[in-house]
Image 1 (tube, helix red, strand yellow):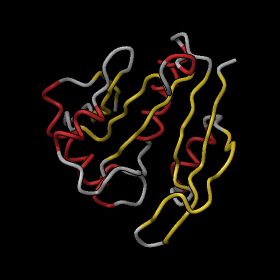
Image 2: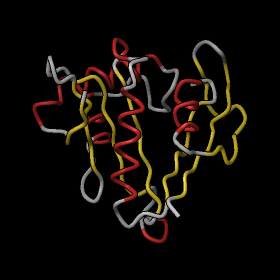
Image 3: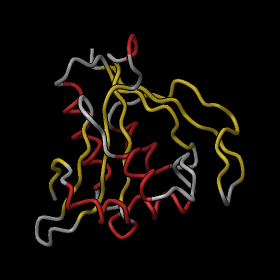
Image 4: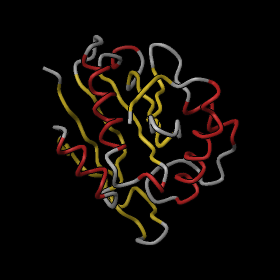
Length: 164
């Protein structure tokens, strides 16, 4: 498995992953009815951001995708952010960890001071565990800020890792 830059021909596979994750409604705060056009506008980053895919080297299949860039413009642009989505059939195989490590490597080689995740569903235990293993801390949790389809309202974590 390897991570590489997103290329236009990857879009059908990336859209399939985004659609699956967003329609499930249990990890991302995106509208489950998000259109393909909106998804592309939201997910494909323009410089200084970056969009990547994790690819199974033996099959060429896209297993997951990531987007990263500045968390906020202007005075907040020295802090990066990233988001990750993994195809359901590829979960539990280290794809998310690989994508996150790649994003951290990229961001720490740029003029960023750290990486911030603004809205990690506290019910997304697998992602929270990966992020904590990679050095992120939960700075706070907004109670009931995420309406999980099965668990009801759960908290959203603000997570951060300093590069200093």
